[in-house]
Length: 449
Ligand code: UGA
Image 1 (cartoon, rainbow, N blue to C red):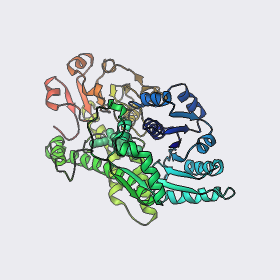
Image 2: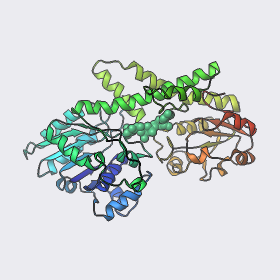
Image 3: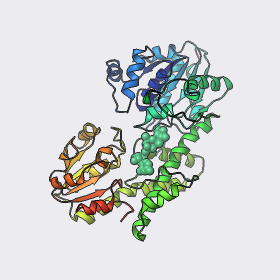
């Protein structure tokens, strides 16, 4: 099928590259002409595992192209994926102006009917507005458009893998023909008729992927309800961690046993600095806002948000307890990205930590495998080291903020010799408290003694 992808951010690039890899002819476009130029020159503007490889192979196979002319992309496709940003407004509501702009472009540039698919995360009922906008803007051409919702469930860092190995593919449609087209678009993934490029075809055979066909409103709700539930789970684990500290229990033992109950599941129960990134915080807010507009008070999600915000305070309680005065102290921050395997620092808890350390007058030296450049632009007063040991040199404390393997695997015997004081405050529970103490470290973490 001929597909257009509008918006070349994380979601758009992964969607475009993976659909091209799966055999479709894909043309990607973005309002940022510089980004299109970069992509054409073979530079991938974001760090995402395997993305460069499949962008490259899809381009070489002639399946993927880029244009800064949205009209060209729209005219040359049967179906269009909208992957533009929906950032939060002051009141928590999602800013949908980019989607409105795209609707106008599609309606005015198209010369034949199209299937228009929302991929960006949007509040429920956006599909209805999109349909209204397309109808209004295409009044003169009289063209008709079909609208569908196909939310993504990709995690940054494993997005390419997730695309080829989804737990489910959700399509919200208005008619049978849209469901048929979407089934055709995803057929190679649904019936696994191609070799997954991530593991060169060595992936274990997975169960059949369910295609869940719903109304558009339901599909939009499924996305927000899923992300919010996962965020809720993390906040729950974090309160359990606080409780473990007061009672004298071990949060890892508690959540591991909880997770063995299949009704609960083991994932998203890791306690620590809390959730960040561009999805959970904003989706939670948008969901609470949406519920409010229809008279439903989503108290439980507001509490999850409150718990998450308090994680940084909890962390600084530990920092103060360990360091007493923060002003003037040389502090190493391990990890800046909001989680491992990404260069994304948006709403990263680690940045809150850096900001607060600088505000309190610490000398901050930070390290991250991928996120230094972006952080440096925001906090030029800190010093940065790509080497995970160099950053610890002469530090009076090491603050672990992101669970990168390079930090998980640090040799603390060696690191301890470089530090001015053997003190680790671990916001991600990466190490064994007993082992750290054995090595002569004062060690603080969440929910474990
Ligand atoms: C999330 C969802 O997991 C995806 O399914 C969804 O498609 C995506 O948002 C989106 O809406 O686009 P992502 O933001 O990439 O994906 O990150 P996650 O891996 O879900 O992690 C979110 C945050 O929760 C991170 O800050 C992570 O450190 C934190 N987290 C995660 C915990 O604190 N504890 C956990 O147990 C798990």
